[in-house]
Amino acid sequence: MKLGVLTAAFGNIPFEAMLDKVQALGLQAVELPASAYGLSPHCPVADLLKSAALRRRWLDAVASRGLIISSLSCHGNPLHPDPAYAANSHAALRNGIILAEKLGLDRVNGFSGCPGDQTGKSRVPNWVTCPWPPAFLSLVTWQWEKVAIPYWKKMARFAADHGVKIGFEMHPGFLVYNPETLLRLRAECGKNLGANFDPSHLFWQGIDPIEAVRALAGCIWHVHAKDCRVEPAVARVNGVLDTKHYSDEFNRAWVFRTCGYGHGEGFWRDFVSALRLSGYDHVLSIEHEDSLMTTTEGIAKAADFLQAILIREPKPASMHWA
Image (cartoon, rainbow, N blue to C red; front, top):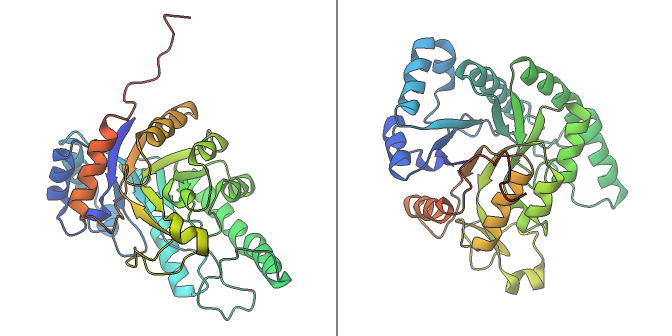
């Protein structure tokens, strides 16, 4: 198991300077953004697709520092009701899959997406959180059966043809937001679909990430190391569905935190152990979205915290005591 970082947090630093910074932090892997959200300063997808020479130089820059690429981050919403937005997200994912194959990678990360409604007139996604009034139930059925499943069947086949797996971040606001919805999409669309497991989005939903890891054993392709703090004084009064801006930390029911600032060593040791038990032995990729700390401090603290917790050596083939 290796410790890495999603490099979007270092988006203001040139590629090789970013790699130097990652190496200096004692990390072993980089997750490189190639997304539809315009946060891809370190991965010039179009140029890399065109030039084998550039790909070699780019890969050499990573390898020469003792680093690996854990995944390409191709986040977007290809099911978006705005056709232009959906097309941009689809292109980012499709190109990311092709580039992953050319780079010798076998996985990309992303979101499942969320459609609008059946009228064809909506221009924003409609995320359904309850089955009543009945219009919500019919809407979510339509979103899955008429939009998500047909799209992801095609994309799962396309990715498989290129030797690539797709890891979905279970993220509220999208159709796949918990293990049940992830497993449904996987069952309907293809076994190369799995999880980019980020516990921060599960904590505030009341999901136990350790149990969720066990439920997803065998289909976790990538992991984000990001924490979350639920504020009991707010959540006990107003619950956890919270649309206040992330910058309103004092009044929100929950906020993203650097690893160790939402949950202590006990959780993270159990989390890493559960991942190994589930068959995952790839990379924990630090994602910095802690608004109480600078990027530099937050990633450094997360790296220091996780270094002693990570299980690095392969699982033993035998037990001398049994």
